[in-house]
Image 1: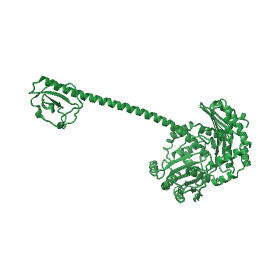
Image 2 (image 1 turned 180 degrees about the vertical axis):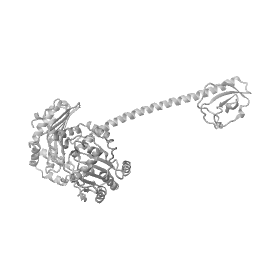
Image 3 (image 1 turned 135 degrees about the horizontal axis):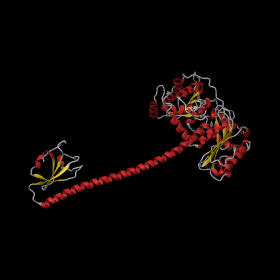
Image 4 (image 1 turned 135 degrees about the vertical axis):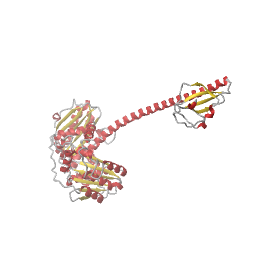
Length: 568
């Protein structure tokens, strides 16, 4: 055997088993004394990846070894030899069987893992679908909340107001609130864009919180996570709103970050093109929500090519810098907060916004036209916006206009799964005329210098003609002053609920609106609501009806009547 025999396993008095490894391999342990008196009788042709050895040998498992059988020189029993050989064969078979069982068990585990993976994939797809639906729903709710000025600051405590030397307004309310909500509002939006820079506010919204003069995007994110803060940005046709939500003990840090993001953001040339995909994704999400598309259609047809009707395009970093230089005016910025000490917020504003200069910003004028926009789309239901010219944010009759909006449908039914027929007389009229499911709700959008008011209808294909003609007749009655005392009481109660903000974020947003446009406070609005008479509401309704109507529709519209046939 020479150096080829390195390890020996004694299997009894009849046979010995030698496990050999090539001389080139490292020798762990050798006991050559057992080789004496043995001679090889057979070399097995198969190889083992695992070999069982005597416990005292301290060898363990050896890779790819060779197994040899040796006959002891003092053995004469053939039967014993056969029995010993059979035992060894059985042991080998047992090892092979054990290995096969392990392979089968492993296969079973892999199969189970594959099944679980499929379940996770299915769950992920269901979650993605439900998330997309929820996102579309929240986008629509958010749009309606932003378009409406019904939510105004709470009157539970007096607001503290300071004006910095450069003209920036700082206002706080409820400093002892359990959460902190901050907002920095800039009175510039899509209506301030030119045809060349269309989409600037959308890009500014998306690029916010990327980095500032003293903070990287990573630092902003890490600090937000460690402080339990959340930052966001909203944009509209006449505003940009930077938001922060945090805990009271992190209010000072959040105020510093928020004001710095507005006052000294880094806008690099190479970062703006990266936002193209995000903007396109935002537009793709919006395109899945017919109500949002319908609002855009309504503004385009109502204001045509004027600022309030412009779509979103692609812009450059230079466009963003130019827009900021033109419209981020100190006297056109409001810093508002709830759940923060007033002096703390003033200090943050002075530190990060105090160097901004006031600019004589001219408010762009949009001209109202009215008209029709009809887009046939293969949808389960038809969506129709039918409305008229409204009023600016600081109009003296904006509260009466909100009452008219609620007379036209309010927010629809007040109880989930119930019909909109109970929400307004217009809803009751449409409900009696159609056979399928329907939706009737009022809407209003007020801006710095103009606004819209009307009703949103959602109707089945077979009910489009009857639903629209019936709704038009009911609208004409309301705008002509055919309003009962019961309808007025209901509409005023709905308006009161809408005027009182529900969350701290609503209070902050409303404070921004109030001081940005110099409009009235909640207390003043509620007092005006209480003093409204039926004659006041009728007069406002008739003023609304005197403007040329607009109609925007999407869906299966083969039976949609033309606007000129509806008698307006």
